[in-house]
Each structure stands twice: as structure tokens, then as C-alpha cells.
Image (tube, rainbow, N blue to C red; front, side, top):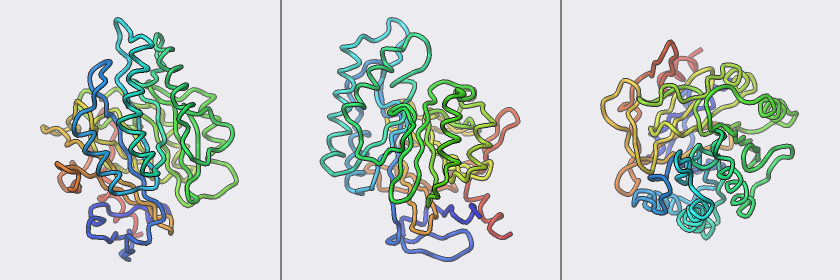
Length: 330
């Protein structure tokens, strides 16, 4: 039963995690650790990253995860008028390489990119940005076991230590294009079994923050497919606030931003702290999530400080630690 695969997050800082039915597993048994960053950019065309981004990268290198996933908005494109020219776009990606990729490469940590609206928007008028995104990541292809049939770096799948990761091209709201949906279904319904299944997209499946209530993938069929095919975790950016939600039978985790513009969770008056997320996938297939914040990113975000549920226009997502115990008792 998938509910038993999702673990309480904050206890990880003590070196132990509690699985849903009460047993404890030492963190040393973790088979895979993944850092997730997102929305690290600043103003349009900026070549500078904030000190918080640099501090987060230093902490990630210190933690030495097996993989880093960037859930989009890695650079600051999508300026509406006038659009950024090639020289500016390429300069931003060179700075991203120096700031993010090179420290991770030196530490031997692969980076999996997810296209964001400020990196590779699918809206009309930003075709050049998408081409440059594709060219950059073609030159900096991660050392990952990519599955056949994708369209790297926009939509692709890979396996790490027996765990499946799927990256979606979702930079605009609304349902996925039919070609991407068919590809995703083929990947998820493929015959090979995996320890855990993780999907990542820039836009979330559910709204998380004020000001972004209508900027999500309004795609019930996609959410249903992810649920039916045993996806354990859906990672997203764009809403600039950390929230580990549970909906449709799987975790849906919004990432805090590291760049400019932290936002308020729905129903909250204070802005979400800048943070990055650490995912731990244990050899049993259990998955746990925690967010790190603070001056040196040594503090774990306490889930009790987050709203128990987020509601908007008849939709609801519940904080994951409040959902799983009820299911585990069944």
C-alpha cells in the first residue's frame, strides 16, 4: 500500500525516520538522497544570483546528495517587452553554469533540469529561449541513465538506483499536450518495476500560494494517471513556497524558492522562508521529505508551522503528515 511508503520528514534531522505503521529505520539505510531546488532566479535578464542561492549550493555540496533536481526558473528569461536577445540569454546560462553546475560537477553530483517558464516558456514569442535551453542542456547532458523515447531536456525519464524519475514539460497552465500524455503513460505503464516513482514539473497540480491561484496544471486526468500508476511523489516549483501536500493518493510537494519573491501559502499572512528540499528514498522504497532553511540551511522546516490544508475554488490539498497516519491505521 503506497501510504506506507511516505515517511515523516522532520524526524530525519535526528537521524531516524518513522514509517507510517510505527517502525523506525536508521537514515543510514537510505539508498538514495535527492536535493530539489527551484526558482533561483532574480529580475529579468539578471546575471547575478542572490547570496541565498550560493549558501544553498554550499550546503547541498556539503550534504553530498546523489542527485539534484532543478524544478525550473533557473535563469531569468521570459521578459515580455522587449524580449531578451540571444547574447543576454546565453550570458545567463553561462552564469548558471558557473554558479550551479560547476560546483555540483566538481562534487560529482548530477543535475537534472526541469524547464520553467523563465527558462523555456512554451508561450508564443519565446521560441528562442526554448532553443537556447535545449542547446545548453545538450552541451551539459547529465550523467544519468535516460530512458528511450523522451525529448530531453524538455520531457524525459531516467532511473537512479532502481527508482524512476520523470520530468515533464509544463511551463503553461492547462492539460498536457496529447503527445506528452501518451509518452508519460507509456513510461508509467511500462513493464519494468521500480522502487519509487517520482515526477517533476515546473507548474503544480494544485494551487499553493496567493497570487498564483490560477497558475497550475488544471488537469484531473493527469492527476488520475499519476495516482493509478503508483507515483509516490510529484515535485513542482513556480509557487515559491514549501508545502508537502497529499492528494489523490500521493505526495505533491511545492518547493520554496531560493531566488527573489517568496510567497504566502493560501490562507497565510507571512511569506514562506527560502528553502530547498531533501528527498530520501530508502532501500525499502519508502520516501521521506524535508525542507532546509535558515542562514546556513541547517534548520528543518517544522511541518506544524504550515497550514493543515490549502483550499481554493473547491479544491483541497492536505498536509501530508496529517493524512498518512489515518490511512496507515487501516
